[in-house]
Amino acid sequence: MLVIGGGAAALAAALEAAAAGARVRLLDAAPPPLLGGNTRHSRNFRYAHDAPNRYTPDAYPAAQFRADLLRASGGGADPRLLDTLVAQSRELPDWLLAQGVALQRPAQGPLPYSRRTAFFLGGGMAAVRALADRALALGVALMPGCRADALVRSGGCATAAQTAAGAMGAGAFVLACGGAHADPIRLARHWGQAAAGFINRGTPHVRGELLDWLLAAGAVAAGDRAGLYLVAVDARSPAADGGIVTRIRGMPLGIVVDCAGRRRHDEGADTASTRYARWGQRLAAYPAQTGWLVLDAAGLRAAPAALYPPIQAPSIAALAAATGVDAPGLAATVAAYNASIQPPADPLATADWCTVGLVPPKSAHARPIAEPPFAAYPMRPGVTFAHHGVAVDTRTRVAWADGGSVHNVFAAGMIMAANLIPQGYLSGLAVSISLVFGRIAGREAARAAGRAGGGAR
Ligand SMILES: Cc1cc2nc3c(=O)[nH]c(=O)nc-3n(C[C@H](O)[C@H](O)[C@H](O)COP(=O)(O)OP(=O)(O)OC[C@H]3O[C@@H](n4cnc5c(N)ncnc54)[C@H](O)[C@@H]3O)c2cc1C
Image (cartoon, rainbow, N blue to C red; front, side, top):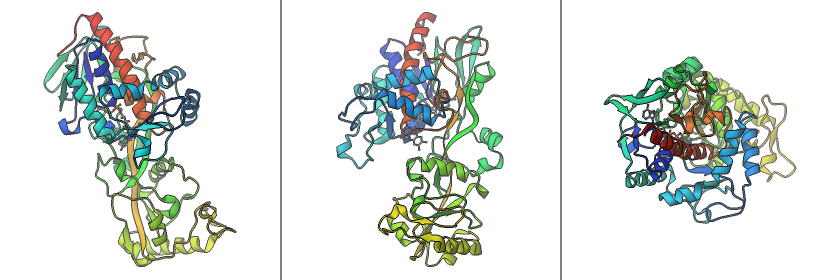
């Protein structure tokens, strides 16, 4: 059988299929050092568990996982896939450990407290390496640097994948090649000019060729064609593959302005980790998709570490000159903001500082921007994944508009994640979806390849 992709979903599928006795070949469009797609950048995965264990403190009951995902997806998660995900997420830590993936012990590391997720020791890159090593040990043929452009179909079966090296035949196919978040043409189709202002946080190799092939062949679409999970990142980040370190946090500690120096949103309203995504979506509507987080020296001292140093200046006027933000606009915004701040009865209760009469308000953490030097981080929306893909059933069989036209094609990972997250997100969910449905797809495709009478090597 042929697995197309090289991230968590593809590697999980290849491992399960090889363990079931299938001969497996895995193609990844990325060159060898970049094998592993967006999974290289990931750090944690979400799973249900009833008691504290070596890798996760406290419990995260299945019912709560289910409720969290239903809420985050706006009720849009497919209930049968949701049940499958939650039930099979329980197995993930043990399965990963059995494949040689190391997990972080919470008490040992600098990672945030999380009872809902476990963290890879060494991050996603270490996990990908371990899974790839295990795949090689089981005899999987790994073919990095090989892109599949389409499948070849004969009647109700796919028979081969088209690649630059020629057609590669197989008895069953797992499409685990991510969504299509890195295709600039597709992004421009849905977002127009704004797409040019987006930065891709992840791999540039996920472009959606096979998603297009599936949909053109009559597969049922899932999710929202224009839906993107966007996160606020430093505008100086590389065009792709900057990873998690390019995130800008610290919005509650300052103000966020556009190029005219105007504030557009309440920076104090959201201090949860969801704020990165909120700001990612907001920045998409800013002129040139760019905003600046402006801090004073006190705010900068409290702000989380960032990859790039902030732009600093001794005065607000000099900061405007250094960033290109409109100087009178920024000066007026900072003056109006400072004048509207109402200290709480207990000035040490930093969260209780808020503005009065300011539009939009800053409803918490509204400390004056007064202490030089002043600092700014330029920000843009960072694309993480797309909320669009192909519909599948709980066995990862692709759903076809005519009820079943190509029956040896299975889809796992971000290519089908929109069945569960047509909108919204929860930390650690993407890797769990990729691993749970990758494993299912591997077992299903191994069976289908067996029925077809052979695999490919
Ligand atoms: C910066 C960043 C941090 C993240 N952190 C987390 C996290 O901590 N926890 C979490 O759960 N999620 C996280 N995510 C999301 C998560 O990593 C991914 O969504 C998930 O791992 C995707 O797994 P996947 O196997 O479906 O796809 P990917 O890992 O993206 O793999 C897709 C693979 O398919 C290959 N491919 C694509 N098209 C073709 C083709 N035509 N032919 C051959 N190969 C092809 C690509 O080269 C790639 O290797 C993060 C994403 C980013 C960008």
